[in-house]
Image (tube, rainbow, N blue to C red; front, side, top):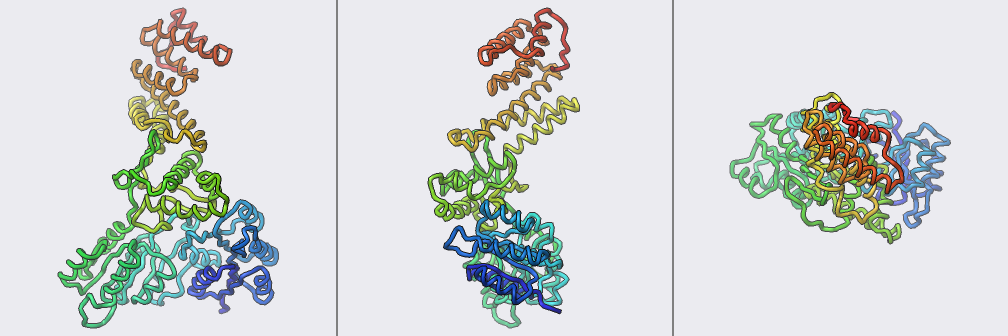
Length: 549
């Protein structure tokens, strides 16, 4: 069978090595070139099945776009050739050019490089199933890589597990369990193979056999235990699950008291459930509680984060949350730099941005590598705050209670609607990011959420009134007007509720206050609906106290 050949167009030797070594490990051929001219020559001499291209081929020249020229030539000469873009940043002009030259081409970012995603993407684009070629044939049925659906949301980090085990039978047993977890995993038979795997990609969890050798040496002198020492020293954030059949009680006691292992599992008492529980514990995402109503506060696993190592890291999180509230889109790197350092040039801003992003990631998840963050993710369009199921954010909870309350009110399930809306009201401890009123990027969102709060209070007032609880309905309306005194529909409700409560004088007073405010501010009278209600109350006409206009 003819070998698949892949063209790698990249001006940095280190990234050529990273990409080409991954390609070669999958059994493909790789041809690396540094420039447009070298790419053109290579294309004349060879036929390539895929191209990996960096749009910028001169790190010293920020205006260089030679890689886009290569992409254009391939698109014109071989339009069916799959192309993957690899870049350090996606500027607006590059993004626009890519959409024109090669719409839909996947973009991988160097700062969040993930060999798993790259390998899976290669297989997907080549129309293959993504089975790793560097595993032993016996394990082919068990090897699992990311699916096409995973690639559609490649910003999300999926747990990666390295199994270090020399026994074929135990490889199959553990692989069978891993195959049901949804995790990505690799297998190494020795310490040397494990280190080689770690050079190619990072792992969240290592499942480690402490022996790995056929000998009679004490367990702590065996290859597996020595590898454990190396992991603890060199990869302190990798979670370790120990799997062993030769450990004595003293070995186990020493292991659990001197090493940060997640779990020790004895092979003689192995169960799939025990391994699944250990994996779940090792990959558990911390629980975040975020308060953006009133003072900004954040809790991780119930503990408040009182101090920020770098103030800009807190600002980054606020920026990402603000964008998340409004439309859920990512915040472009250029926008983050402009917000954080408005007086800095682009070059210095780019040098500072990733360290600040990583400080923010580390603050939220100190036990994982920043690039493996479960919350602050990198997408093709910038950075975004991912609302993991372990995130409890007051704004989103407020909106959810408003939504459910409105649905219940439409069904006239007033008591249930009242409960949901009252909970939503209690969550609104103040305006969105109250302490940040001086910054302009939160103002629009703050106004929008304040309007949502007024809508909730109107719904709550109607729910009270439908149950004949006019005193509570009046208080809800007064709360609304303190937030926005120009809501005419709320004045109309106050008139309605006071009159239904038997207080005609107060109802008419509300109208006089309303007409005075509107004439002074707008030079006009209230709408006909409000004037008609005023006439009905003035003439002691009956009104429907169960229907709100």
